[in-house]
Length: 346
Image (cartoon, rainbow, N blue to C red):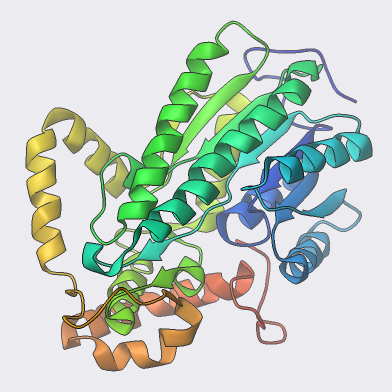
């Protein structure tokens, strides 16, 4: 039973109704798992109906009898987001917790990007968060427990990451949205939490899109994203997100590397930009011939990636790939995961 609004967050999340966009795979799926573990009824939303059903099966296997609903929803369409919130409210007696997590990742040098890549990132990441927040707010304001809204940003939105420019621009806008909403809603029953993860082992390298020298771009991205030195386990990250929601935290930054980057940019922004410029020079250049080609999903270039990597990156990728590949199976990133490979999303 839903309790009375508690601004300190001591009531906990048991019995609340939660909605997670981008909840069919990766971090979103793991956040849904943690919300179920805290006693929430959860609605997960994504564009792919088959992916949603696989995600629901994973969640119910680990939480038998839990209240898990799926809604096919494209967050770039505000009407679909409005329908998502209505359906979740009708099924579970309201909406108390919302996590705006839907996003895309494009990895490519600037000369291999077009305006359509920036528009796609903005539509999904930023406008998707805007639609989710605006359609969730009327329901969150009615929550007897006091609504909780989390917007998933990124360290890439705090410090612009080379070869991730559309993603960084869109995530930077999400950061501003979260801070502005927090200020606008101060004193109300609704709390807003800005979440800025660093690199996480979610298997996102398979769902990301790669341009330029796609195999080499996939190679460095998957090597770094899977490295235990700089990336974080998705289960641990999701637990931190749900705890921040429960406690009504204003802002959290996940991973030591992301915290260092955030602090460094705040104290010495010019130096930080110079360092990211040096990092950009070490990344693959755009192909010298022709217009930007359509980006390629990571799944399509995975097999060829190792052949395109220098030996050092090949060893780093081999070191981190086992962890990241296990995460991709657990977190529904592969379209056809091997039988029995998708274990508890941890």
